[in-house]
Amino acid sequence: MDANASPRLHQPMPDTRAAREYRFGREGYSLVELIAVLALLAVGVATAVPSVRRFADEAAVAAARERVARGLLRARTSAVQSGGSVVTIVADPPTLRVVAAGVVVHQALLADGPTEVELTGGRDSLDLRFDALGIGRFTSATISLRRGRADAGLVLSSYGRVRRR
Image (tube, rainbow, N blue to C red):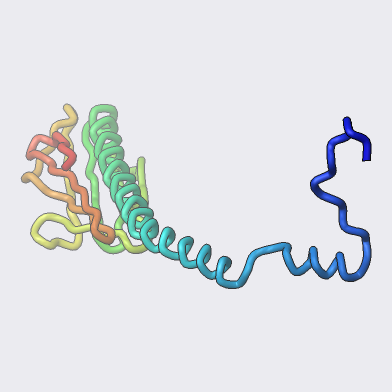
């Protein structure tokens, strides 16, 4: 060995069957390590699922509330344009229909699947009339929307103003 040459610390293993079996036995992860990783993933997913479900419920309820508000705005606009309009909101199936001058100008499904719509006093349907000035001619009403633990709603004043809650 030359005095200036550095000694080789690691000699490559010859490509023999024993060497391949040695390397094969040392590669990869043990079953215990894989089970530990899977257990950690399961705990992470179990803690994330309720949050994701709550977020989805809140988004669905907020979207339904905005559909109702948009329908009421459409009814007021149609009332001014055509001399009056009637909004009919049905709880089951949750639909909203705006009729102005005898013509349906807007119709929408308010909620999907598990979203529940509850109207003032537990009624099945609610008819709201707007005059030619877009002013509501009805008693105040509350529309509640629920899905899972999420809930939202609209409070309608007797003049047709909409307040989100």
